[in-house]
Image 1: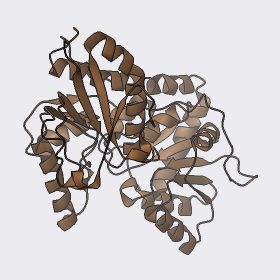
Image 2 (image 1 turned 180 degrees about the vertical axis):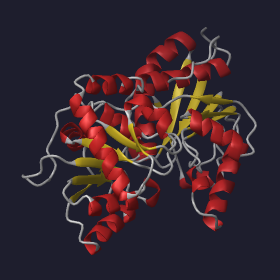
Image 3 (image 1 turned 60 degrees about the vertical axis):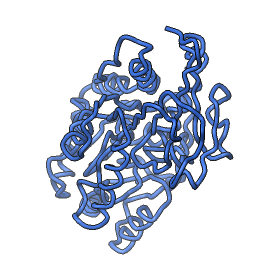
Image 4 (image 1 turned 90 degrees about the horizontal axis):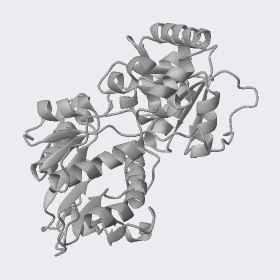
Length: 368
């Protein structure tokens, strides 16, 4: 159904800058696909899509979107008189306020990871911030069934919640580029994260120290957490880890393609994008059983039931052996990865917008 007047939708990702982390990747993929969908949305429904970004990023997703300037003072007030029919905040950490005439307000909640950290002022402050954002939300979207349950269980939000799984970019079709790994490295296990304690980096360091005959590559964005992990490895004289910071997609593709398996024993995740990225290469993936990871990994992953280094090594060796002995296992893993598709994910958001705005008759079905 096409509206007689323009239907304006505003998107805000806050101070989005780089796709080198989960929230940045979500904003990057959302903007890219929204730009692809924009001509059809205009033609069929008279929908116009506006993206609030810092001025230097205007045009970053393509020329089919409208761009509006995000200002620092929008964290305190937003006096814009522009009217929106629907305003979508792309993650629960965005502190920038929507305009007063923003209409229906939708927020994507990626995780409530603060709830899994230690008690204290920081946890209380994070909880209060999330409650404030949800208090001005008319419709919430969770990126996994686990997060949807967490919202209902841990917050005061009582409005509707939809679940739309994230997609996961396949790097399997881009030309790989060998990163600066030693020439003699052959079999190695790959881990990719920001290397914070919530990613269980301590358990991975203990594993590497225990299984000194195995090789590991740890990758992630440069930052305090990665530097701290590197310093711990140095102090403990753990010499079988190669640390690689600020990897390009081409370098990630090489590491996914050449690794023996991918390790992601995270303590708390709203989704777990790197696990699915690795699965696109048909690689065995080793996950924790915590939070959203069993939902995302399903039967295609192997799981750590203990983070004791001896137990983790046993899971690695058993899973790697089973993977090598089953010629169909890589295909099974890749089929599972194909279920998580960014085009489908972002299209489901626009289906939800149309349903909320009365322009469509059917909600997006939960993805599996």
